[in-house]
Length: 271
DNA sequence: AATCGCGCCTGACGGC
DNA sequence: TGCCGTCAGGCGCGAT
Image 1: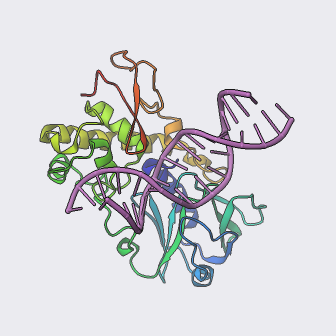
Image 2 (image 1 turned 90 degrees about the vertical axis):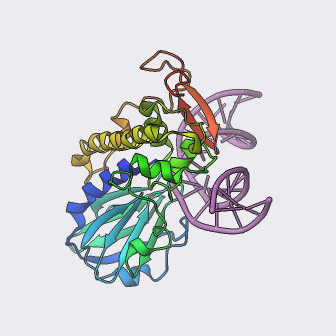
């Protein structure tokens, strides 16, 4: 599943291949994504030149003169740059064809993803306007988390996965950040000290940065099959390791459901 | 206001 | 082999 580091990796790979390019045609094969793809999108986008590729949370925004294409990859979304003539597969829902004969193809088997158009500033779009600070920005820090957590009874893991608190921290990186911070993911958000939130903020940044760096190493392949997610390269410390020994203390990593999500942690290192 | 849990969807996987 | 049930999960949204 593309998490923030994967989306950022995709953004970096996409940028040099689409910025400055004119979209001469849009092919919609299936409009039924998380929300219906606007039927008027091809007509609006045709003729637009991509000015920039930006990311907010896990959303990608292709800014054009008349507005922005908003993309979300959901669980299984993929973007590739291909020769426009490449035969589409079963789940290739949309193509953006450029004047140079290449094509940005959106594939999403599970269709949890989104393809939308925003005529105004995409950051003001209803899906994005209430997003919390970007985890890699200075606005995300221990003091901020501590203040936001006042009175919150939900678990700290659910708290940092709330996109109004921090944008773009998904299930994998929530677990992976709580581990180096030494915080039990099931602890109530409102009971965690300021000092520990400072540790957590630092851990979130460090974990995401490492994953982005790992993802960056696969960027050279973007124009073929597209970048493999960062977590294929990065050794996950707890996620998906239930029953296996903790790399630090050797105790078995535990998996517990929390807010309908699998949560992985070391009961010894995280309290 | 905070929290809970639903639903969207397909592919992978295990059991019979 | 093949069929079927189960699980995975981002994330917005309606209900409580």
